[in-house]
Length: 268
Image (tube, rainbow, N blue to C red; front, side):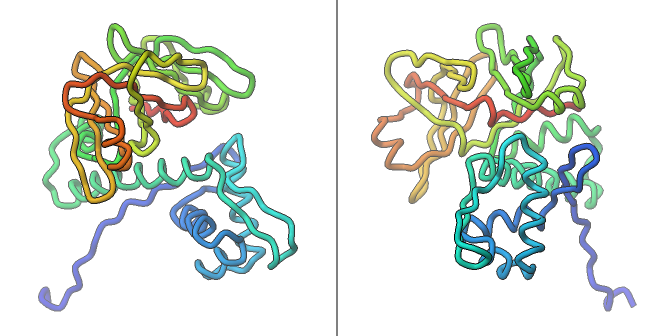
């Protein structure tokens, strides 16, 4: 009988993969989170129900996904040593959870039958509703090889450009060309804010000028909306104490600092 049926839920599954290598999905991201929490591979393995050897192999598989390691192990043997996440590991977790949240929202709309939009428009609208990160539509302005990396200059508007530093292999896979429309994904927690005189940008750090469009305070943190001009906005999550120290108020000039390696380039 229909009344006895358990309601089934459609779930989105996200996995990251490089050519010829195993996929990194939710289980391995959780392993990274437990590693950060426990400070050791043994502790993380126990938390997720893996053997030490299984956890070590899984973490090394994640390392193979990125140009830099996601964790640093300390000496001490199988159970005596510790391990810590690197900045690349933390950035991977933030990016994965951000993309997973957006994919889940899209899935819910399709499963409910309430979406009549085509995929690119739907993804764009979902991104605008997500307060945890930024999805900014822009154009590829220039491409510059940089060893194993590729620097991608993204034009946000007539006066503002953003640099993304991606692997050369990723650049080839995406097939980026000047003039192409793409979406820049930037976790709001990785956007730093500064006031005062102009901050000099370089090849690894973006410095975007803007004005504070809004400020929403919580008990511990604040979400700051930065108007970059010509309809482009950027969200940043900082502590409320930092927002008070910087005296952030609507209309004030602000600098948004973003590491080029933290900018994710997505294509339709």
